Image 1 (spheres, rainbow, N blue to C red):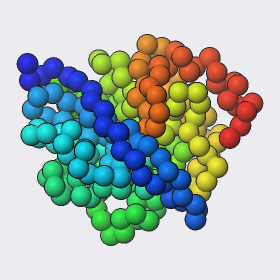
Image 2 (image 1 turned 45 degrees about the vertical axis):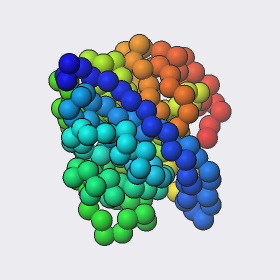
Image 3 (image 1 turned 180 degrees about the vertical axis):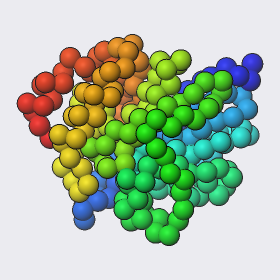
Image 4 (image 1 turned 90 degrees about the vertical axis):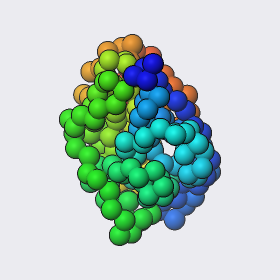
Length: 210
Protein backbone atom coordinates (compact mmCIF):
# COMPACT_ATOMS: atom_id res chain seq x y z
CA UNK A 1 0.00 0.00 0.00
CA UNK A 2 1.19 3.48 -0.79
CA UNK A 3 1.12 4.70 2.82
CA UNK A 4 3.51 2.06 4.18
CA UNK A 5 6.57 3.85 5.56
CA UNK A 6 9.95 2.47 4.58
CA UNK A 7 13.55 3.52 5.07
CA UNK A 8 15.98 3.05 2.20
CA UNK A 9 19.74 3.48 1.97
CA UNK A 10 22.05 4.92 -0.69
CA UNK A 11 25.83 4.93 -0.22
CA UNK A 12 28.06 7.42 -2.02
CA UNK A 13 31.79 8.10 -1.87
CA UNK A 14 33.74 11.32 -2.17
CA UNK A 15 35.88 13.84 -0.32
CA UNK A 16 35.25 15.84 2.86
CA UNK A 17 37.16 19.12 2.91
CA UNK A 18 37.63 21.58 5.77
CA UNK A 19 40.43 23.66 7.29
CA UNK A 20 42.67 22.99 4.28
CA UNK A 21 42.53 19.21 4.65
CA UNK A 22 40.71 16.55 2.67
CA UNK A 23 39.56 13.06 3.58
CA UNK A 24 38.04 10.27 1.50
CA UNK A 25 34.66 9.35 2.99
CA UNK A 26 31.68 7.11 2.38
CA UNK A 27 28.35 8.79 3.17
CA UNK A 28 24.99 7.31 4.04
CA UNK A 29 22.00 8.91 2.35
CA UNK A 30 18.63 7.90 3.79
CA UNK A 31 15.31 7.95 1.98
CA UNK A 32 12.15 8.03 4.09
CA UNK A 33 8.81 7.57 2.41
CA UNK A 34 6.28 5.30 0.77
CA UNK A 35 5.31 4.45 -2.81
CA UNK A 36 4.21 8.01 -3.55
CA UNK A 37 6.33 10.47 -1.58
CA UNK A 38 9.87 10.45 -0.22
CA UNK A 39 12.21 12.68 1.77
CA UNK A 40 15.96 12.58 1.09
CA UNK A 41 18.29 12.96 4.07
CA UNK A 42 21.65 14.41 3.01
CA UNK A 43 22.98 15.13 -0.46
CA UNK A 44 26.42 13.59 -0.60
CA UNK A 45 28.84 13.55 -3.51
CA UNK A 46 26.83 12.19 -6.46
CA UNK A 47 23.26 13.00 -7.43
CA UNK A 48 22.67 10.07 -9.80
CA UNK A 49 22.30 7.22 -7.27
CA UNK A 50 20.22 9.44 -5.01
CA UNK A 51 17.84 10.34 -7.83
CA UNK A 52 17.70 6.67 -8.81
CA UNK A 53 16.80 5.76 -5.23
CA UNK A 54 13.94 8.23 -5.24
CA UNK A 55 12.64 6.76 -8.48
CA UNK A 56 9.38 8.18 -9.77
CA UNK A 57 8.22 9.34 -6.36
CA UNK A 58 7.47 12.91 -5.40
CA UNK A 59 10.42 14.23 -3.40
CA UNK A 60 8.90 16.51 -0.78
CA UNK A 61 12.21 17.71 0.70
CA UNK A 62 15.97 17.31 0.69
CA UNK A 63 17.01 17.66 4.34
CA UNK A 64 20.69 18.25 5.16
CA UNK A 65 21.72 17.12 8.63
CA UNK A 66 24.48 19.74 8.62
CA UNK A 67 26.47 21.98 6.31
CA UNK A 68 29.75 20.11 5.83
CA UNK A 69 30.52 19.81 2.13
CA UNK A 70 30.17 16.01 2.04
CA UNK A 71 26.55 16.29 3.23
CA UNK A 72 25.48 19.12 0.91
CA UNK A 73 27.59 18.43 -2.20
CA UNK A 74 24.69 18.02 -4.62
CA UNK A 75 21.91 19.63 -2.58
CA UNK A 76 21.17 22.46 -5.05
CA UNK A 77 21.27 20.00 -7.95
CA UNK A 78 18.82 17.66 -6.23
CA UNK A 79 16.57 20.58 -5.38
CA UNK A 80 16.50 21.70 -9.00
CA UNK A 81 16.27 18.29 -10.65
CA UNK A 82 13.64 16.96 -8.25
CA UNK A 83 11.70 20.22 -7.77
CA UNK A 84 12.14 19.89 -4.01
CA UNK A 85 13.02 22.39 -1.27
CA UNK A 86 16.45 22.01 0.33
CA UNK A 87 16.30 22.34 4.13
CA UNK A 88 19.19 23.22 6.45
CA UNK A 89 19.51 24.69 9.94
CA UNK A 90 20.69 28.31 9.56
CA UNK A 91 23.36 27.73 12.20
CA UNK A 92 25.38 26.15 9.40
CA UNK A 93 24.96 28.98 6.91
CA UNK A 94 28.68 29.76 6.97
CA UNK A 95 29.54 26.16 6.10
CA UNK A 96 26.87 26.08 3.39
CA UNK A 97 28.28 29.23 1.79
CA UNK A 98 31.68 27.55 1.50
CA UNK A 99 30.18 24.95 -0.84
CA UNK A 100 27.31 26.84 -2.42
CA UNK A 101 27.85 30.61 -2.19
CA UNK A 102 24.69 32.50 -2.96
CA UNK A 103 22.51 29.38 -3.23
CA UNK A 104 19.26 29.44 -1.26
CA UNK A 105 17.87 26.90 1.19
CA UNK A 106 14.88 26.70 3.50
CA UNK A 107 15.59 27.15 7.20
CA UNK A 108 15.00 24.27 9.61
CA UNK A 109 14.20 24.90 13.27
CA UNK A 110 14.32 22.87 16.46
CA UNK A 111 10.98 21.19 17.10
CA UNK A 112 9.78 21.58 13.53
CA UNK A 113 7.61 18.71 12.29
CA UNK A 114 7.56 17.44 8.72
CA UNK A 115 4.92 14.98 7.56
CA UNK A 116 5.77 11.91 5.45
CA UNK A 117 4.00 8.61 4.79
CA UNK A 118 1.40 9.07 7.49
CA UNK A 119 3.82 10.00 10.25
CA UNK A 120 5.85 13.00 11.43
CA UNK A 121 9.56 13.70 11.44
CA UNK A 122 10.60 15.87 14.37
CA UNK A 123 13.67 18.06 13.89
CA UNK A 124 16.02 18.06 16.89
CA UNK A 125 18.78 20.69 16.90
CA UNK A 126 21.90 18.80 18.04
CA UNK A 127 24.84 21.21 17.72
CA UNK A 128 28.45 20.28 18.42
CA UNK A 129 29.77 18.61 15.29
CA UNK A 130 28.68 21.86 13.67
CA UNK A 131 26.56 24.75 14.97
CA UNK A 132 23.55 23.81 12.86
CA UNK A 133 23.68 20.02 13.11
CA UNK A 134 20.26 18.41 13.38
CA UNK A 135 18.90 14.94 14.02
CA UNK A 136 15.57 13.67 12.73
CA UNK A 137 13.30 11.63 15.00
CA UNK A 138 10.41 9.47 13.83
CA UNK A 139 8.75 8.38 17.09
CA UNK A 140 6.20 6.04 15.48
CA UNK A 141 8.92 4.29 13.49
CA UNK A 142 11.32 4.22 16.47
CA UNK A 143 13.96 5.73 14.19
CA UNK A 144 16.54 8.50 14.54
CA UNK A 145 18.69 9.92 11.75
CA UNK A 146 21.67 11.37 13.59
CA UNK A 147 23.80 12.79 10.79
CA UNK A 148 27.31 13.15 12.22
CA UNK A 149 26.19 13.80 15.80
CA UNK A 150 26.05 10.20 17.04
CA UNK A 151 27.74 7.14 15.58
CA UNK A 152 28.12 3.51 16.49
CA UNK A 153 30.90 3.87 19.07
CA UNK A 154 30.85 7.55 19.90
CA UNK A 155 30.08 11.15 19.04
CA UNK A 156 30.94 12.88 15.80
CA UNK A 157 34.31 14.55 15.37
CA UNK A 158 34.86 17.93 17.00
CA UNK A 159 38.49 18.67 16.19
CA UNK A 160 37.86 21.06 13.32
CA UNK A 161 36.45 24.55 12.84
CA UNK A 162 32.89 25.32 13.96
CA UNK A 163 32.76 22.26 16.23
CA UNK A 164 32.83 21.85 20.01
CA UNK A 165 33.18 18.70 22.13
CA UNK A 166 31.24 19.79 25.27
CA UNK A 167 28.41 20.97 23.01
CA UNK A 168 28.09 17.67 21.15
CA UNK A 169 28.19 15.74 24.43
CA UNK A 170 25.38 17.94 25.74
CA UNK A 171 23.32 17.37 22.60
CA UNK A 172 23.74 13.60 22.85
CA UNK A 173 23.16 13.39 26.61
CA UNK A 174 20.23 15.76 26.89
CA UNK A 175 18.41 15.22 23.59
CA UNK A 176 19.33 11.91 21.97
CA UNK A 177 19.82 9.74 25.04
CA UNK A 178 16.45 10.98 26.30
CA UNK A 179 14.83 8.95 23.49
CA UNK A 180 13.63 5.36 24.02
CA UNK A 181 16.43 2.78 24.19
CA UNK A 182 14.98 0.77 21.29
CA UNK A 183 15.25 3.74 18.92
CA UNK A 184 17.23 2.70 15.84
CA UNK A 185 19.97 5.20 14.96
CA UNK A 186 20.74 5.68 11.26
CA UNK A 187 24.05 7.51 11.01
CA UNK A 188 25.73 9.75 8.44
CA UNK A 189 28.65 7.34 8.05
CA UNK A 190 29.16 3.72 9.00
CA UNK A 191 26.86 1.24 10.70
CA UNK A 192 23.53 1.86 12.35
CA UNK A 193 23.06 1.32 16.08
CA UNK A 194 20.49 1.94 18.84
CA UNK A 195 20.18 4.47 21.64
CA UNK A 196 20.32 1.64 24.18
CA UNK A 197 23.56 0.30 22.71
CA UNK A 198 25.37 3.65 22.88
CA UNK A 199 24.02 5.29 26.06
CA UNK A 200 26.06 3.24 28.58
CA UNK A 201 29.30 4.56 27.09
CA UNK A 202 28.69 8.28 27.55
CA UNK A 203 31.02 8.73 30.52
CA UNK A 204 33.71 6.75 28.72
CA UNK A 205 33.43 9.11 25.74
CA UNK A 206 33.70 12.13 28.00
CA UNK A 207 36.88 10.74 29.59
CA UNK A 208 38.27 9.94 26.16
CA UNK A 209 37.56 13.44 24.87
CA UNK A 210 37.69 14.33 21.22
